[in-house]
Length: 540
Image (cartoon, rainbow, N blue to C red; front, side, top):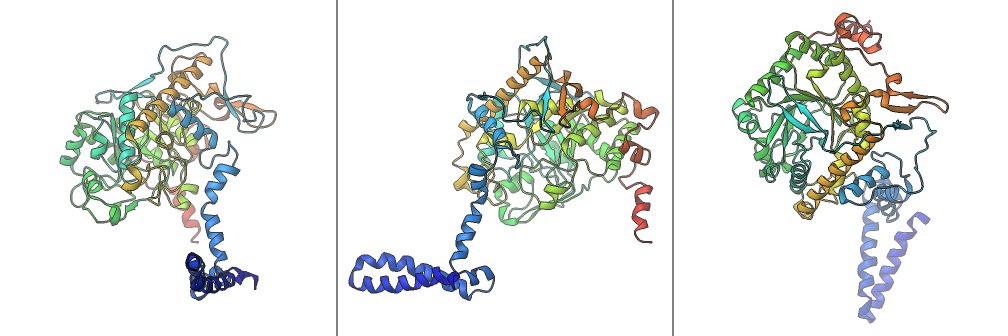
């Protein structure tokens, strides 16, 4: 009966305090407290939804309370500095320090074990270099488009709706101060994106928000109205994203405010649906035709697409369509499965899509093998927060990097992991004005610009130690990884990198190319016959 002891004690204390209060009025507070607990215990006993509460009246709530603060207890008191869940405390602290302009040096040696498997580093040179500027740039465009000089580090796609109004304001103001771009996310361009005039990359998803007609299909007229705004510097078509590739989304009617409805071009107070697939095209050749159409309608602005790699034959089909049609995107954003700034279904966030490193190398190798790599820029996105993250990503094939959560930390995000609840404690990922209005735009804009600038200064110093002047000089030979207690390999030795034009002459000795390259077709995303035969074998 000990499980009922707390409930029984509250009943006894309620009765006792009631008797005392009848003689001494100062005891009525005890009647209120113990009476409320007694009522709660009674409700626990008679309700039928929770067996735990019926068996442990009142005591069950203690468990629920401790469980509710378990993430905070773990984050602040238990977890190691280097445990990535999903960002380590070490990484978060680094972002906070650089955003605030504080000292980011580490005392008394590294916490990383250099003899542990997967430890990585960049080799230094006995002839170090020193670039005059840390403002590293990459020229985008040239495939019939007006070039844009992009920073090597930019804000990844995060929509207004997922992020608050003041978070969007601060990100864009920071981007303008630092001279880098701010990707709008598929929620389109809101009034908050426009207030400070920072460079925008307009992301267009399958819902065609900001460029859709009343039935949800692509509208040329509405696209032109936004795309030709001078603040919009590039156009990005989203095929899929790392957090939930192949999955659509629904913004519930209650969250479709007047501002969100105006930005997206949807009715207010009605469920806002983002389909899993595009309606403007259905084949790889159709995709490239749509890219060319967007580029032309925008007035020649650099236009590309973002995808998380899934079925390799689908990416190969796109690559073959580039080869056959001669229509090229100006850039491709490769979003890794480790990405994700908002909330996603558990199975998708944990078990769908290719991680960024392998995805980036597959795209890079394919373009190199077709002799197209120098005409298409590649962007890596997925858990990037430090200068070494940027260096490693560029060494694996990227021209520049985008970061979402890194810039959220710069805004003050504490990784409370409540993005989906509208209860973000820092006002970053919420639409509750009582929360987001406390986020000071001026202060956080300065932190966004500081984080960007100080990270690129660290990148300059890292490159200089390696004897390099620009990130474009980085290659897989510069990054080393421990693969066992006694073995170290450079990325160039660990992975197979294709030679320029290799796919034009033969199928390389690379498992995924040997299996799927020749079977893929530019006119369809459909799986090759070999895959279909394997599926049919289950039905025999």
